[in-house]
Image 1 (cartoon, rainbow, N blue to C red):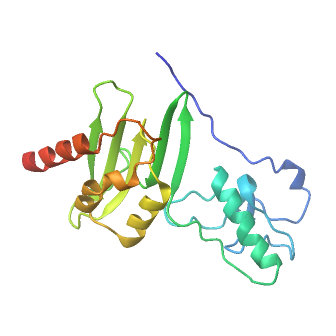
Image 2: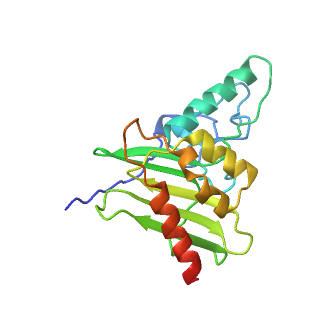
Length: 201
């Protein structure tokens, strides 16, 4: 009985329109977060990459990318030029009391490629579910969305870097669980559902 509407983020760069700084929807920057003006940089929600990094958007209005941009730019300003490299996509949020997290890429049915396959599990109480994306032919793990179950960022980041297969991820899912102590875990139930889906396919 709840409808959520998000209108997105539009960088407020109107005050720069009379300057010589190159603008798009945001302040245009290269991989070093430099603008077209020497010694002028842009980071955070206003920074717009000339070209997207992988599947990321050219403007990334999430908290951790702003932090990473700040860390990257600090290196450059201190004499150690460094390119912005955000790594694997991830995000986390909270809908009322329910955790939502995403690691890697899980596209909707309309947007996913012909090689992307999904495994979906939902708990009977409708407050917990996961969707796992993997490559149909190579079985490479592509990403996961979790709702109502907290997962450990470092674990999924490692698995994505190692290009682990979906079978490995599902069998070791408990290693990524980050729910507080005494919370009920559902990895065995999830693995059974995954194995059942394999038999059907």
